[in-house]
Length: 226
Image 1 (cartoon, rainbow, N blue to C red):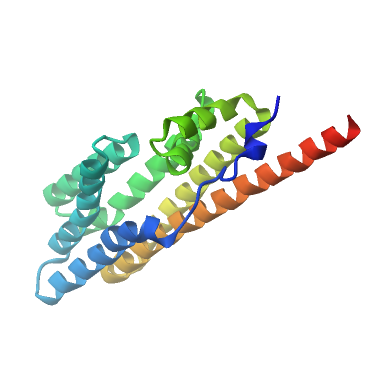
Image 2 (image 1 turned 120 degrees about the vertical axis):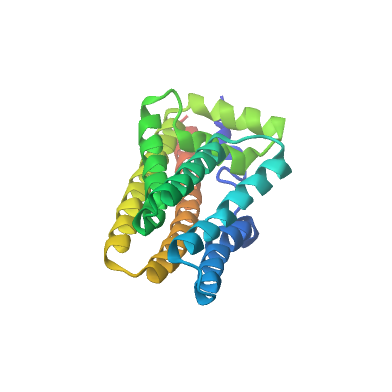
């Protein structure tokens, strides 16, 4: 049987800046702009942080409305944003408002690592959305790749890397809240989140393409021997 991983032209999907532009606007630029704008008008640090945190929530709602379906990751994000915002206002703690994203990031990292013990790891489903979207043919193709050991190993490795990276990011966010000013934390936190996301997407695509190319060479060598 011909290995479909070796013949499909886009095993890791296409990546373009347009894909992450909404994230750059809603999750990076807007929270920082809102925070500095409100702080400049004398709004307290706590309320400026809370107001800035509404932009990522709006982005998730936008995605839900556009796709007309709820994604598990989006639900987790919205839940943590709601709990974190409510807790920040109840406690009046600026520190908690600065670090609530760390708990969300750490939770996502732990979910990635925990999913390694599930039937299929989390990044199998996340990558599938980038690769196949809602195309039933490509969905069937992607799901069928799970029968190949090298594909399963690649998906588990990618998921493990994402999990570890996000745990490290969570620690860096927490450390910045301990030693930097709120304004510095807001800027660094959102920029770091965007850079990490883009870096992971690019690395994942490059790694899966490398897996594909290696598989092509293996099949070519087998064909020559036979």
